Image 1 (cartoon, rainbow, N blue to C red):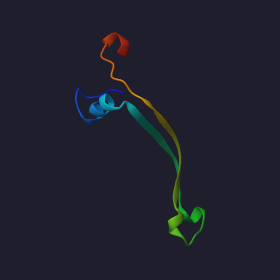
Image 2: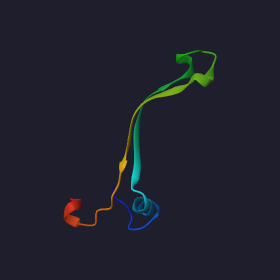
Image 3: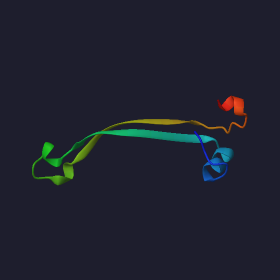
Length: 66
């Protein structure tokens, strides 16, 4: 993960190192009439996602970064 040389994210990594990361992709909008033609609250989105948890560390060595 790339970052600015200072900021809240880097301070949090230095303090604790715990990290979470999430990515998702919308596959399809599901209009309400797909489920019930009279209830708009049932509209939804079909999507896939990946959620990761782990530990971060700051790597200073340029060779190690690449």
